[in-house]
Image 1 (cartoon, helix red, strand yellow):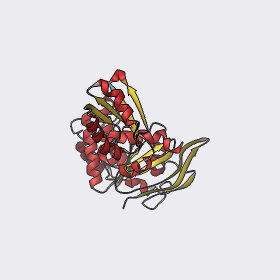
Image 2 (tube, helix red, strand yellow; image 1 turned 90 degrees about the vertical axis):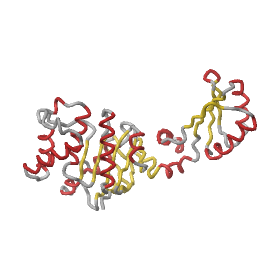
Image 3 (tube, rainbow, N blue to C red; image 1 turned 180 degrees about the vertical axis):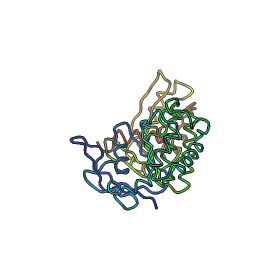
Image 4 (cartoon, one colour; image 1 turned 90 degrees about the horizontal axis):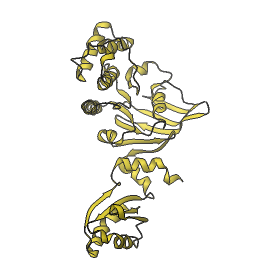
Length: 314
């Protein structure tokens, strides 16, 4: 089984801390590691790849230390965030070159490179120079290089960055199929809905620390004391003031704001289930008809933004 384990891993770069006291386990399937730029995503990936050694703690990939086991790297495919091409090469030359580094002979390397590029939709352009490629074609070529030798572990650093919608969709479908094959896939991103489409297994990281990990529902348990916001727009704007006054009488409403110019009120609650049960009854009793209710409660974006704000640790 392709597993990755961190045990209280810290990585320092001089006086700068890349990640701090990270403990996590990754099993086969897709896991998304989410965080803003500088959060520690790339450092986490470098430790998995054996490109840097932890300052403190231990990491194991398939039971061995990736920094010390060069053979292990033949089972890991890596897509870096930034381009790292030899621009004078064609895609076939580029991918086959790296396959030969993995000890495949020239003939089978070319054959494997062509198959990988063909799977990613580059059959008509694989013999062109990379310097002529669009951003989407470059992304596909990076993924082809990382997957052509059929590694069982994939580490993808911002794989959708700059990709056009067609390329994004193709890469997502390929990632889902690789996950179905039992590969262990770690994807870093700061674009939440990309990861949400692929998996419910998420790691939220900020300032080098893991804020939460697990599925979305488990993470929500950490947020019981963090109010969510609901915007409510009654049809009759004269009911704005009576409505907010009525709602502030409820113990499960923690705050409220009146935005008369926008024709809405903003209510905060840390008991969303009670809100959705009782609020319709209140509207009916008060004979208030609303035209719009918008909540940030059910999106990964909301979970992420609230956890990154760190309200529950202040």
